[in-house]
Length: 528
Image (cartoon, rainbow, N blue to C red; front, side, top):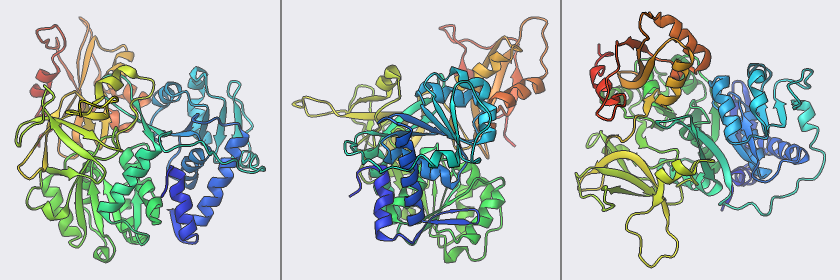
């Protein structure tokens, strides 16, 4: 049985070395080719003196070097940190500094965009560029290697990391909370392998499958496409799409058997013309990152009648939590389903007791998928990772569960139903966005007195980001100037959809800006 993430690759290589592992545009890579590339990179990383559990940032779109870098870092005993390629330098800099990245693997154009901010990254020592053989420019006192220079370090013999355990850290995934900058969720090898085992089991993924990876690998849902592929010995098609129609074309061109997406993408795909051959190969579709609107679900079923649709719910802090079996879609389409294999879910009251059916409470997840907490953030870790309710009193050490912050109920048969979040997190286009992070950028413009970012219902995005501002006396605002400022510093999914100006922002009895009231006031602003 695989213990660490990279063992998934070696197991599939040993079983079927010539099977296709990765497809990227017009190129295919067998398990043998991927294994050899990963081995070469692992040697090079060891030659660069990568220390056990040291962090390696990977800031690239989906390409073969992205995949091989994840696995090579794992095999060399390091921790890989996927950085969403749509992030701007401000967000990338936060990640590099927050988890003390020592090596960064990226491209020349991305390095140029980061130059000014890298001086803040005290732990960063080496940058590896995948798109050039050698590098002729300098940034601070960093060692910068072209790809050929990097792999040339792989001359010695690989030293197996015999001390690497399943409980060691494999990756850190950055996710937004309701306050502050994104937090690094720390996932162990055990978390990753157990998650892959669970998903492969209920989706019945086999070596005959070909999965289309359209979601970011920095997103646990997206990364899981790759990991389940490796576990099953299947094929993964890498894709950074420009238009939804590109996804539809890829379904037919690659004869995709499994497609995972978020509601905002499904809404767009449901209105397009699908290949006539779709029912001969598309075996299943999955949704997570928000609820699937029932009209969209009905359209998708008409597009691919033979494809099974799995509605899922997950937490980055636990990798995946629930799924609704396709045979329940018509019976309870609004349900989150039940716990995936290798997980136990509880609905807990404020006093710590378990809720009865139809009684609202907080969803709590226990089991091997529960992550190791937030990187370098003991306070937020203590808020979200707490002892499992109703443990045996005789236990010396308490088991830790992840408390989701989501309010849910169950029915008499144990199916879960989502009610709402306990914080102000905005969920848009499948992303989780911290209001505080957007507000910080708004304030940095110097154009407003006060501001609040709220999520309001939107038919395609799930929630759209609405900015409400107040201004100093005798000051006017050109909203486009504020939006232009946001576009310079924020990725596209974090850019506000609209800006509202009020003379004064409402306050609650504690004197704080009343976010809930503003959410109610503007709840219908995007209704058509």
